[in-house]
Amino acid sequence: MPIDVKKTWDACGAAFDRFTSAEDSCSENIEWPVVAGMIETVEGQRALDLGCGSGVYSLRFAERGAEVTALDLSSVMISLAREKASERRLKIDFQVADISRPLSLGDDQFDLVFTATVLHYVEDLESFFREAARVMKSHGRMIASVLHPMSTAFFPVADGVKSDTGQPVYLGSRLRKIETPWLEFGEVSGEGREITSYHHTIDDYFNAMSRAGLRVAALSEPHPSPEFAAKNPSRYEEAMRVPVYLIFKSVR
View 1 (cartoon, helix red, strand yellow):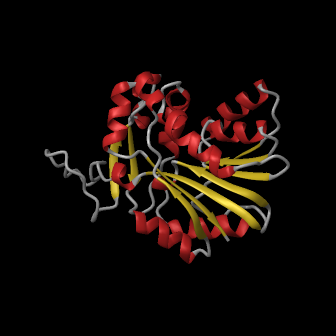
View 2 (cartoon, rainbow, N blue to C red):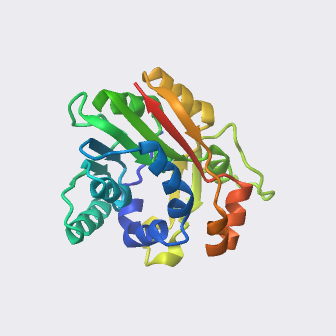
């Protein structure tokens, strides 16, 4: 069953941006160091950021010399991203688009196709990866950073049946619902206070990529660094207990 997340993300806006770009965020301290190593150089290359949010990664790619196209479902997020790009005098093609549907982009265009912590909102992973493979050049690569399935297994099942034991549900119901984790980072209206998403298992991701004609070339379950422990001990301890990210590098 497809879920409608547009209203949620329009309501989250700046609060989500502050949450993900904070100095002690998991994205900055756990995800980005691994992504930076996997993408290698992007200078002079074309990059596509699918589900770009407020443009954190789009800006990084552009600053490193890439020609960037970035898509997101939320017009609020795209407005935030455009504002940031303008402040830094970066030219990025930001577009409002639903990445769970066929992309209005031509074949074999991009050296790098990238997505970060978006795919738990996409029901049909195979169709998503087929589109990613279609727009990617034959020598290109895709980096997909997803919320680790061990993490999303702890998301309560969306049918209202919530276990009091706090135990994960890894197999079974895919539809999950959680309270928005960035409420303390800004004003969030009622429509943005809960998020419905999908729980995909590791083999869901791997098999969807394989059926879409992509070969996994590298895989990382990044560990939080000791430096992160000094910045935010409680978040570090939580990330050591349950991995936050699973990051794939795949090629056609």
